[in-house]
Length: 205
Image (cartoon, rainbow, N blue to C red; front, side):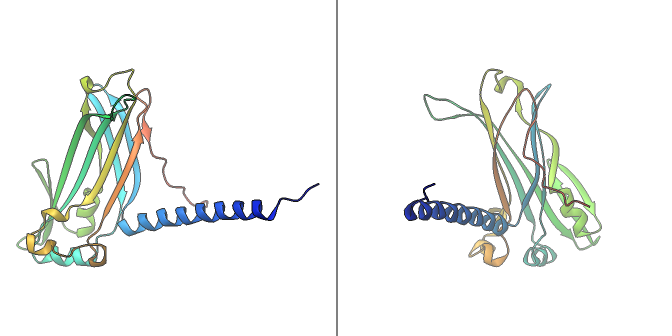
């Protein structure tokens, strides 16, 4: 039996090394953004396309300090629903945005989360942050926007939106200052069944 040549072995080793490097780079990018996407599902509803998602992250100390100084903090989820087209660039058929405004109320010593004209107060920061980490049954497209024979996918993003901070604070903000919280994902839609990202593996007891 002939042995593989040295050059073939070297090429195989380099391919494995490249794959490991790419995986490590992607893993580092996810950690750098500070947000884990735990669930992202989209399914056809009677009135269109309903999306649910949940995230996990910790609010950096810098953000907590800004809240206590009276600065409002904004989180934004953005959705684009696109239709594949072989003859031209993909068509955007729907888009939706949801914004959460997180503030500290010194008179009542409570945190307030505002979204879509609704307001809810919380006694602790943990409870307030938990309320803005996700949403269920969010209609992001109407029935008329989605054809049964089309091939669709959605682009999802969720982030701490520093562009809505007071302008003097925006100068120089980034990961090194603890203000970068974001996650992005693209999901192919199967309109016959829910499209979702698989949940993280749970440790075995």
